[in-house]
Length: 115
Picture 1: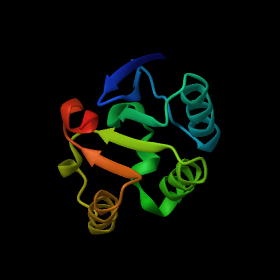
Picture 2: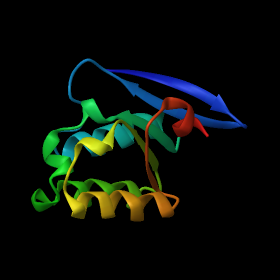
Picture 3: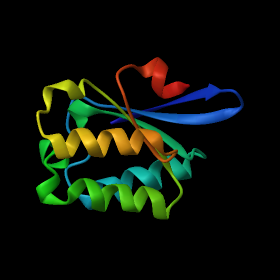
Picture 4: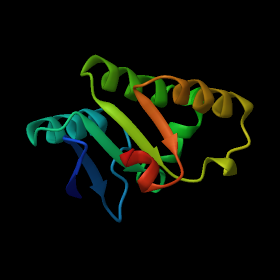
């Protein structure tokens, strides 16, 4: 995994770039938070394809556990991807509610994540 740091409006934003999965479990999320925090950022961009599909199945509770850690460590998260492929009404509601807040955003482009 590579971490690219973007400077936007005086804020450092970490973009996690990888060909492989970055978040497959709770410990992976904690490692990512720690790595980005060490690099002086409190905002992270991760791509949907780098997150285990279990995250998007709310029955596994992985999404809730991971996002709770981001909240605990006051780390903002943007997940970039095409979320229309998920037919679960629960997940669509979860995405909608998350996007109303300031901690987690589900967006379709890197540009949206950086803004």
